[in-house]
Amino acid sequence: MILAWVISLLLLCSSLVIHLEKLTALRIIELNTIEFSQKKLMASEKAILDCQNNLSHLSQLQDNACFIEPTGKNQWRISSKEKPTIQVYVNMDETTGFITRLNWRQVFE
Image 1 (spheres, rainbow, N blue to C red):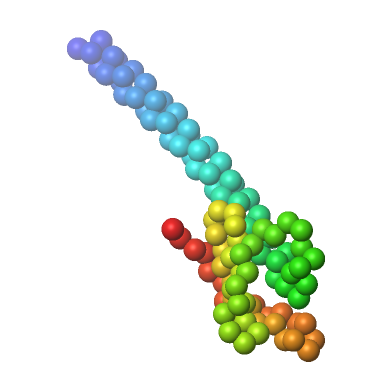
Image 2: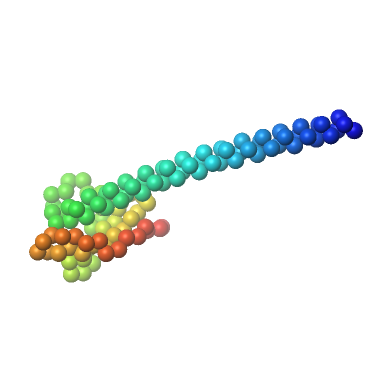
């Protein structure tokens, strides 16, 4: 009877260790995924900022990392080419060249 109790206790402990190993592996995968996603989001935001800052002289840009479309009088929609896609609407004052960000959103496909 005691032997059966000890064996069941050992099996219970071994299953606990297996579940803890699986949980630890899932946590590592989760943290790596979060870090990768944050890096991609920051890269997209940096590309948007570069395009936004160079909006007044688009013809001088050699490597454009964004889609830039006019949406109205002095308003532009800038979308990143990288995933995740970020889309911003900006208003550019023609006299001063000052750019104001009106809207920000992440585009889901």
